[in-house]
Length: 283
Image 1 (cartoon, rainbow, N blue to C red):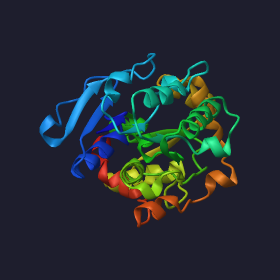
Image 2 (cartoon, rainbow, N blue to C red; image 1 turned 120 degrees about the horizontal axis):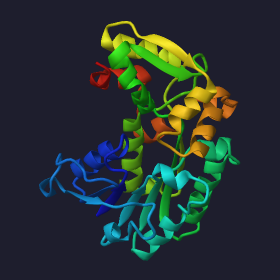
Image 3 (cartoon, rainbow, N blue to C red; image 1 turned 120 degrees about the vertical axis):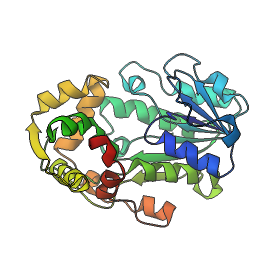
Image 4 (cartoon, rainbow, N blue to C red; image 1 turned 90 degrees about the vertical axis):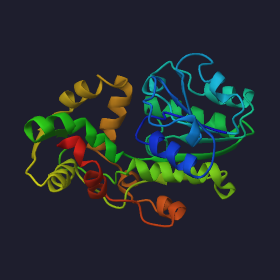
């Protein structure tokens, strides 16, 4: 049995589906009750657990052989102890963990939230478990932050409108995660996951407009405005670390990585593909 945390999210949902389609039993873990979109008959069992609670994951790990670990936002805050979850996995008899980390662990190792993720990575390496680490850059699905304003006013509001990074489709992350969970060839792998091209927020707005078939206006936010908006849904430290990358990406953060294609055997999907597939969110 494979446990998938964050199972109702943009990575966890397609990962859960892929594992079930591969014939594996899956325990889909989320903080809130999942919709009844899957049942025990398709090999998926849904359970509610809060990873931020001490030992919160332990009941879900009973009988698990593998774990996909996606940390909730509050475990990125200063003072959280996300590395403790690795100890829970060891105690629960899990054999393999695939960790969703961040490219920033390599490119911005001293950012407050990156230090915590580095500790999780180190704990995993030292655990004696089989492991793989995924380090994605920005997610294409972050564009869903704009869905309300696009629906209401056909406006995308974002900072650093003409500064781009090679964002990745979370469905591609899910496919890489499935490969790492199911294929022994990926044990000990550290994969930097990016999309196939650098794209700016203004370029993303244009791709959304193309998918909609109607114009979308771009509005440039200040950093302070963006931080205030992001801090409503994530720790302020994570918002600051994210804005540092978005506003002034390093050469390493602008690099298009070959790792996703190396695992998947095909190029990762461009943002325009994600926008077309998710256009209903913006209508």
